[in-house]
Image (cartoon, rainbow, N blue to C red; front, side, top):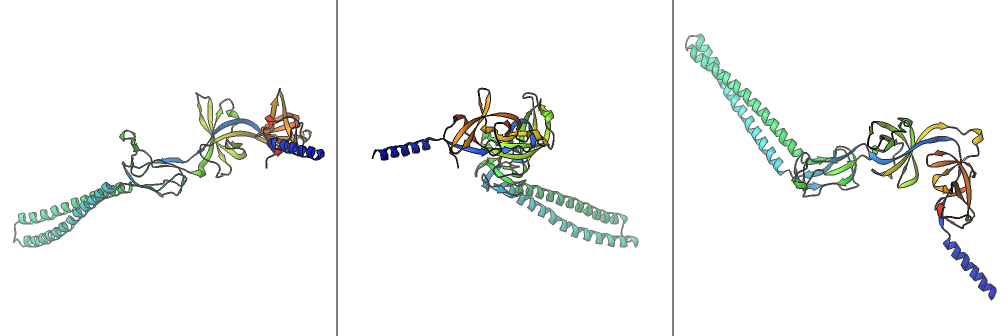
Length: 375
């Protein structure tokens, strides 16, 4: 009976200790196969090259709005419709004026035809010496006058047509369309609100309808200390790690170095493009960028070196160590470091290819402690 109690107590103690064992994440150390050395690191943000807050060209009330945050829009898609009652009234008035002016052309043409026939009869009579020259001059003046009035009428019709086009453009301006395709990231106006291309109304008038971002134009913008800008070149490979996904190494390359410096911060702005975009990459996300050097091969004397994640390194009293996981326990092992490789560090001595090291929670561990591997 006593033996059973002892065994039960031992089992309970084992379960209790197992439940208290911290949960950790581990990663397998890989051999150094060469690669690119890290030249410098910088922090910045994901920014789109094409981003716009779409505004109306006129001041009017929003009648309908068809967008919401997260909506994908195409070029030319209708985003909102504004109150167009005044614009329609102006268009109707302009069209009526044009039609009335055009109607006078028919009357002038009839009068001109009649005046030309009259002139022809007067000319025949004048050649036979049956009418005075003054009568012929008056008939010719009537024809010339009607021709001049016809030219003026045609010009008035052209002016009326131009007014119709202006009124039609005012009506078209009541429909707000997307200038390019992208994702709506901000809905800046609501139905019933006044919108205007300029700030007005003491802050009660909106200046934008919606903000659109072309997700295909996302890139990285970082500030590089001007002391190190000579290490950065167009087309240079970089690796980016989003603050939201620190373990995700995203390949990219330098697109351009903006040719101006910020005298306040002593930095130069650098833009880099992603080799491949991913839906997880969002505008204004924080990002850390590592600029890489030339590709190199591993010399024969460095064949035993391995690469380990920087998150696995523990600094203690001037020495660097890692915790190696083996059969449910961790072993503290001092290591000697080499060069930095992006988000990894070269280990010259202390580890072998295939060792499993703790990458999260290493600072809270002690040598020989039992752990549970997170699955």
